[in-house]
Amino acid sequence: MDSSSNKTDISSNKIIIFIDNYKFDVTEYAHTHPGGKKILQKYNNKNATKAFNEVKGHGDGYALGLLDKFCIGKVD
Image (cartoon, rainbow, N blue to C red; front, side, top):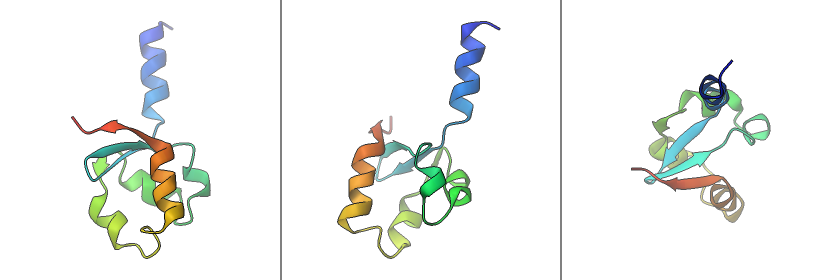
């Protein structure tokens, strides 16, 4: 297997969500997410801003700190 197909296989397993024009790789967090992995997968490669903001508790320091931890850049 060449390295380019290896890269694709790895990235296809990632869960990347978009909130407020920032990208977050939540792959590592998915198994401990209080709402479950499925909701993160539902928003994989999608804008999750509205859904994120509608959840009570997402505005607290803990959740916002997690966003800082998982941020991988701005949406192009």
